[in-house]
Amino acid sequence: MPNNTKESLKEQNIEKEYKKILGIFKNRDKDFLSLNDELFKRASFMAVTLKEMEEIINREGTIRVGTNGNGFTTCSEHPAQKSYNTMMKNYTTLMLKLNNFTDSSPDKSDEFDEF
Picture 1 (cartoon, rainbow, N blue to C red):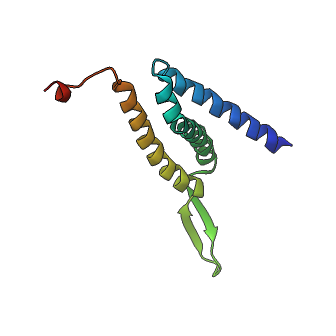
Picture 2 (cartoon, rainbow, N blue to C red):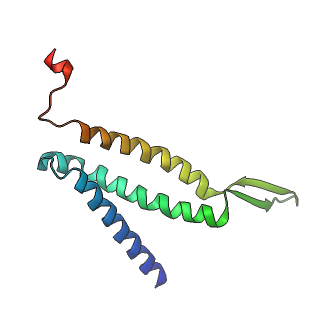
Picture 3 (tube, rainbow, N blue to C red):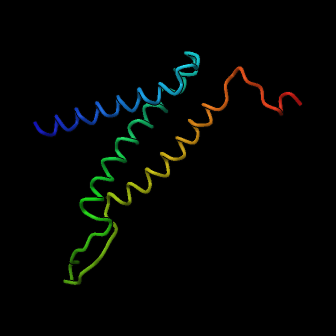
């Protein structure tokens, strides 16, 4: 049962993050919001998951020391660190795209259009 509580807490945190993102786009039309809803949900999931992985990395470190089958000590990157790095790149890319959406409004025309 503790796992269900943890999953429920994660879902609540994702929902909070989702509402925060929606708040940024509150002035956009319904079509825009509907079209980009899945992006908002993915960004929310990634933000919460990145925080979880940060906690694991802070607690366990970025390097794992182990022993291979021959008895030699080995060092390797923590799996959470590797996942964190990959997800952080994707999250950053997504957030940059979402940020571009805040700067451009369908009602605005840019200098190129005016030209």
